[in-house]
Length: 286
Image (cartoon, rainbow, N blue to C red; front, side, top):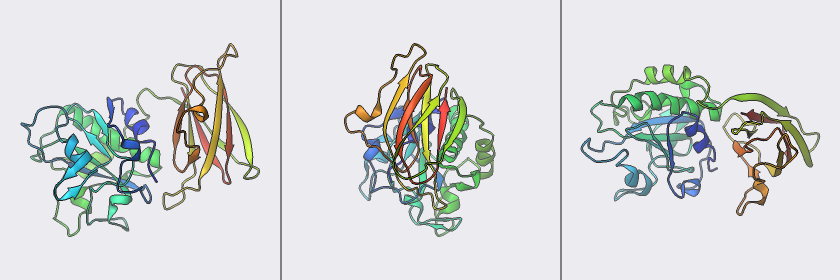
């Protein structure tokens, strides 16, 4: 699977987000499951200019290892770079909580640092917020975060991210709270009567940030049976249509195997046309 919600999780940190062109389809194939997060540092020299000088390497790779080398990057300013929605070569030989060779099971964050243990104040704030957001979106606890130094095989093969204690980051991630600038107004559980096509009407806040997040239920291995969202029609208080119907956008893929957000700014209610064989959740966001 390719993970479409990386950008939504990153934005919920409140830090700037840069979408690296092509991230939605970049990867060494798709992720097999999405079960956790591994933290890294880039080991690029502090003297390298810019906010995230490692961007080209983590996106395109190096002579001995093809890119992408992470799913997300973290710049010196706290800016989050969305690199790849698919499998990235970041963990190598690795093991954690019964998972082996984590590249296609855990998302990788490459944070800009020379590896001497120095971090900017923005990074120390943004790193745990980003980890917490990713774990919230995948519905996993903070024990599913580990540093490369924790998961590498054999033990001691890696030291990153130097200067960031795993227990400290987990505690900060757990206390990150609700996403910045996002208010989840309500979670609605839809239980289809059958696997045919149905319409669910939901009511929103009418705010400029109104959105719908459709969440297929994940199995224990992080996978989900696909469901379909063919159209979303939304209206404002004056009964005039608002937002854009995603089903009418070029290249729209109605099949969901992970969470997907639909922006419906100003909407007070929306009709969601769907087909699903199992219960799923809809978050109403204001």
